[in-house]
Image (tube, rainbow, N blue to C red):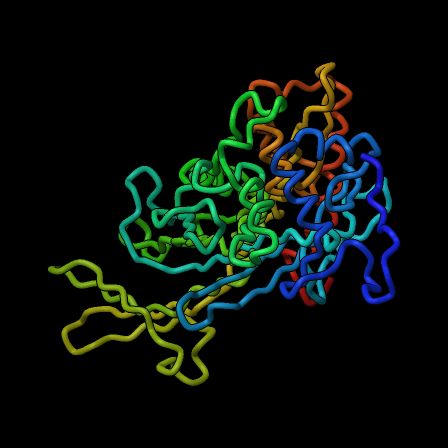
Length: 408
């Protein structure tokens, strides 16, 4: 696609042919958005043929990562918020050379943001693991997460444009109604590159994936969740809510869960064992903590001879952080060649038609998980080695950020 140039205009219009309307969007931007909606494959190849992505990043670059901990202090015992892209301060800015992992994601403005909070329940451990607690993950979304999500948190591809990651319909002015109607008309989104529609985001599948890898990565020691062996243990419920879905939600969710667990502190509990009624566990609020005894275990005897114990609150001893790296496989031309892009945006995920690879690594140079999705996600041995190398580099970069934001 040849670059669009402004034509000479009278001095009364110094901006040239393409002006900015009252919504801050120029006519040229509307043309490009319509072109992306009508011919997504050709639009993408205009960039990939020049070894660049639509948001200006190289293929091996990820968006900057910003992590905030302790964002839900009133309603949770540990929380965090993770943003991929956009702008922020004090965290991994993502700027690195071509041999690194990140670029400047602010060009495209695509921003994925998730928030996670840890709540606690007390339950009875299973008979097979009497010294273990439990951890569970729940993921939710709403129409505020993106224009494709319904009230039940399910993504419906038919509810909006197939190739638009964000909805601009509220900003439509009358002078652009005809052009934008073409861009958002589902019937006009038939392209030679779209043999089948993109895959919708499966919230339940993401839940299962996060739960499985969190447990298998040994990031958390379940024995530290025990209160009374065989009688009572903590059950940590991690609720992840998608605030803005602009691609690579799974990676952002796993990073957010790890940061929230880093922020988690188990409260002080008081246990009472009686001969007839069993065990009673009571969570002691911070303002009731005995002065000078917050870091000790106390044992008291009442008049009836029952025993009471207090266990101090504590932080969890966590293992190496499982750092995910997702790579989308994009089609390139008609010769069945492909392009691998790190940290895909919503548009790139649509164009990949669900073909992606996710590798989870840690700083011990261990591969926690390797997942391949899609029928066309075939890689050669050299490509697999390159994916592993990218995953190891990203794990090294983000380990410090997740473990201790203030020290990075």
